[in-house]
Length: 143
Image (cartoon, rainbow, N blue to C red; front, side, top):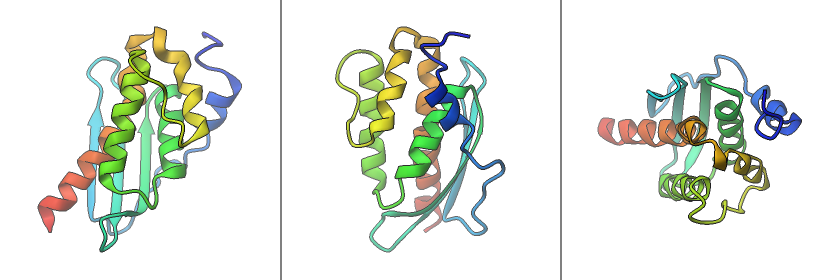
């Protein structure tokens, strides 16, 4: 195991996700899978009248980096708009490609920068964002 990728902080975040966390009546739900590594993230989302995330549940069947990324998003996304989640996803993707800085809004995101040199891990890190965006899209289809 590469200690630069799977350090104590990443593992602590990865294990902080609640297994089988669900929202009883979500506005939207989605599961996305990375064909590269097989990681899967499922998201349930509830948005308020202003389109802000008011409830979020994420379930991860992913590597520690994917789980850690999901935990970071889970711990910080309530109160954000879906467009803000999309911007964060793009910022993280750019940072992983060394095309920009890691977004600084959540200090824990800096922990994911160690994966820059491991492109095969990028999809797992971005998967939680993709799941939330897909769940929001499904919510919009229903309304």
